[in-house]
Image (cartoon, rainbow, N blue to C red; front, side):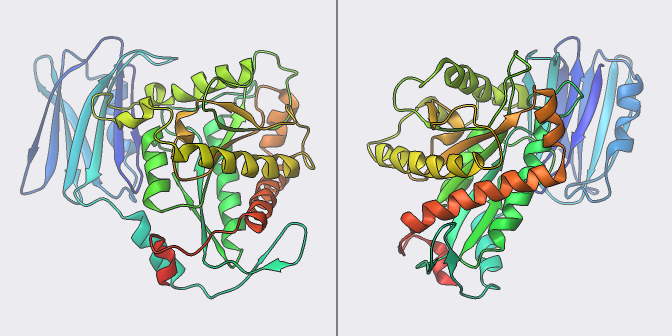
Length: 381
């Protein structure tokens, strides 16, 4: 056994076992007390498994404790004592990137948290107000604008890595949290994160969250990487109806779309609509608005960072495929550039990037305010 890792989150907790060969296993559940039992065949009781029980944190929503021991010759048993009923999901992942064979055990709650209900409850505590455009007079929106902020990568999927060891998944989460806080300071705006910690969220689930929330905008945060360490600057991407607008856009989309393979997703059960780049004719109008949003955000980013491209690039990014939510992907800077890697770790720089994205969002909403609609749950406040 090469390694064993635990990724706790509110949505689910994941345990990953990594090995030099594909693992044979048997999973079953027991009651009184409630627990999951996982038997791993043909593995040694080495340090990776012995140390696994010490990786369970007190705040894990689903795991009370974990025990590992040899059950019989050639079989190691992992017993997971549960805090609440769960729906376990287990699947194997073939070697990809820096990983060997992985066995993934996900523990989902029987009743998944409803992001819409949580948002409505949060919004009911807020008062009415107005939105100031980044350039111009105050504008009163007809209702609260909901922006889904997506910190790229997470968990097993670290994203790009800088020369000094900075991980893209950490940078994107820090900037996304700052952007969420800035958006929530606006009286007529509310932000929701697709992930709030270091765990992986499948690309389809990120898109589905935006649609479930009837989001007005979707902004995915990333940090670029290139073989040339002198490449620098910010970029903004929207979905493409046809081919990518540049070689870099095409290569980047291919890299980002492989995140599910690295992050670990059960290919047999994941949402099939990701295979369809365009869902219906309404996507054309959505892409048009995505380009408008991208233009406004890019203009603001250009005031705090060099631009690697002065236009909104387009490619077939799976995470941007919501047919009814204008969506952009922001490459904040090149983590592969030593200078920009240092900046990405800097609190003040992260704040500048987040504020520039906010100002771009505000400018877009000034020109394209969301209209009240019966399907928008936030009007119930």
